[in-house]
Length: 274
Image (tube, rainbow, N blue to C red):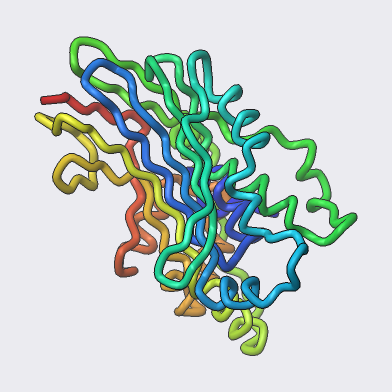
């Protein structure tokens, strides 16, 4: 599977694996450097209704997103001092899913891969024996977002942005000449109409100053991808195919007219805490 928007890293794999989901990650930072990371994943109302009709005793896919064992494994990968505060099933606006809250003592020790939890759960929900794309299993996961917090200033670094931007300079291609099959396009639009992924950074004590592109109150949005709106126009699918290994800035420019879509284009974000 080709990575169309490198900033999303593992998140894009999740998009194509679990199309009826909405996933939100929120990193919450306290002034002393401690905080939480909340990952909430919800199935669409349509999918939730179908799961409600499943026979009693059957495995509910929504449970994949609040699995205690998997959450503990994820916490261990996030860094020293990261633990699972709680896991819980979620019911919201006719949708069901799961929520995991991780707790950290020092954000300097945290390494965060956006979309990994969703991607892993999506693989688990695939058909028995279903294999990843050729060569996909051997590829390393995206480099994690890292944090440096000192003297009330947080610096967030996303190494994927810079690395892929360099690659993209020599690898951008033209959009494919072949026309998209209308029937296949209609199916994709139906599949992905409820898909959304977002990553937010919340500063509990407020933001005094930041170079982030998308800020509202004490919340910085690093990515907000309403995938249903993205593929509502077939021309956007052609853009995605043409943007193999494109930089975040290129992606943000190409899809700037899509309502609600936000992509942080900077490799390094700084936030001064009030």
